[in-house]
Image (cartoon, rainbow, N blue to C red):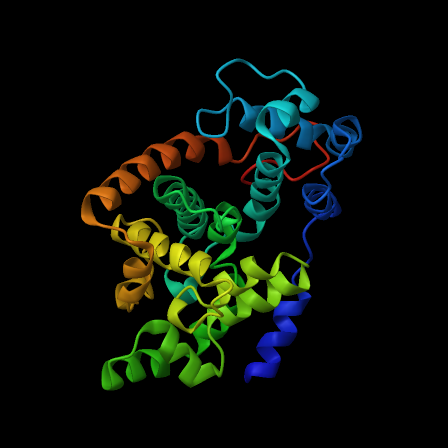
Length: 295
């Protein structure tokens, strides 16, 4: 297989549901009508139930019970609602074993959720204004693995051999053998889904943020550091996570020091625990038209 074959497969992955793209459009509309936005979600009873479940969760939620979609939008904001719906839409794609990376059905999902929470926490703790898409970029940064995993599995031996002989990271060996790595595949997929350029670039350069366009470098730095912190905690530590090269300049640019990193890890652990139980498969017969959370 060559790079062209891989790109063809990447573009065959179904796009995100139309409701996700509609919500994304609303994020850029300062005069958005919350009644109309609520109707977009309420059209799907299963999606409505899941939004309300997340809106009342410890991580996403409000201090008091939220009983309607419109109330959730009003209290939590359109960006938060978009993140919730994105989580629900992505879960069915990534909750599958990916043998090429040594990941079981929950590993990539847990890692994606952890990096999303960690990236958002980094932005909050450091007071960064240019990383409002941190949660989204963190959630999607490794999405390329769902396509490249099959190709990596076929070329497993050459990739490992190059890593050992040339002391390369896993993604560098991917590039040598396949002509592309999972970060570039992710960028192709996210671009085809019409997601923001900063999210696409952060995914593309999450292993090498120093090579990212300076307009988007801060978000790439955040995702890189969040990725490393989460792998260090054991979230989604597949075969590639054992051979990960850190770009130390990213942490330097962000100004992250040990005490802050410890606080970020603590808050991320708490957030992951809050969300993990909400993304379990539901029993059949719920009547939902939308994929259940964590299906």
